[in-house]
Length: 418
Image 1 (cartoon, rainbow, N blue to C red):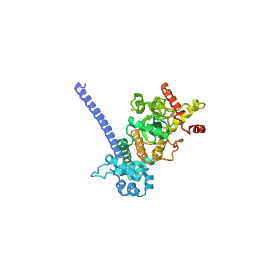
Image 2: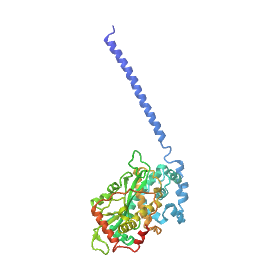
Image 3: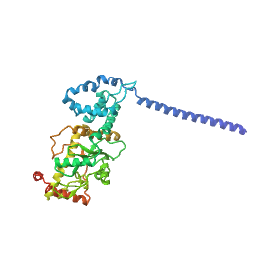
Image 4: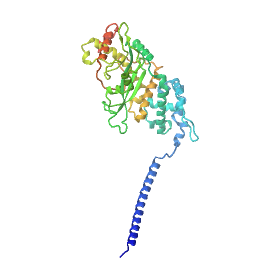
């Protein structure tokens, strides 16, 4: 008979062997995972901090070979940057302190003027990041970073100059311009929203999928009488209803909270009753004390006065349509599906609206047809619903004004053509 001691000793040895085998298996598994991780890291490891090809950027890159003396040829310069040399230099002066990088012991920093050049080329041509990287002899990630950082600087430092926060004084000034230029007193802006075509973001489901059957975000804007943007807001998902687009925007929330700083009611010329200052919009927007929209089509066919109101409102409202048209003509990035992550996308679109205003300060678009908006790839938002009895009363009073002391000589002829 085996003693209990020998049996226990044998069991202990067997257990030790089993544990050794298990330890070996665990160690082997860990080693295998470490080797796999090393392979993965090696696969994505940079072979060069700066590729040899890009090191010769200062000799063979687009900025050195083509852009350096481009200012000597004004028409080509304008075609390349969509602005003249003096506007480029003025913009560079504003942005330089915020986009210039410091040289290091390992590499020379890309100059601020070259960074601005890269950003403007992307915005005005919609060239791919890869093609732009090859042209300028830069890495793909470098180009992406430059575009994002420059757009961020444009929005942060140019916006206060070209799109300051509206005040009561500014709204009053805009109302005078709309009255003088577009015969619509008490109008403080034309409002519209457009779908910007984007690549479907990762894991977004149908959030960005709109009624036009493509993925988008919505750019909501108010334009002044001179085709400049006064307020812009972006971020609404493409699938949002149109009432949701306005109500979820900062503008919509400010209107509902009465924090827009709109001037007090004012009498229309030749009248004694004060009416609110209003934005003019299309059927996509709800009727509101401060938002006028057209009368529905089924009410207009047999009512000349309503038809005249719709014409006068449409004439003022088409300012924002034309503003979007100018924006898309100048910045061709809007003419294609924008392939960019949402965290970069919003600031890019906002930067374009700032640049639009910056250039509008000097440029005159004399060929803009006031009755037909410039064609734009940006898609309209859907029609909304009518609400608020008080707003309907205000609209009726504007209608009466446009058919009495506020009439213009050509309005009857214009509605007879429609």
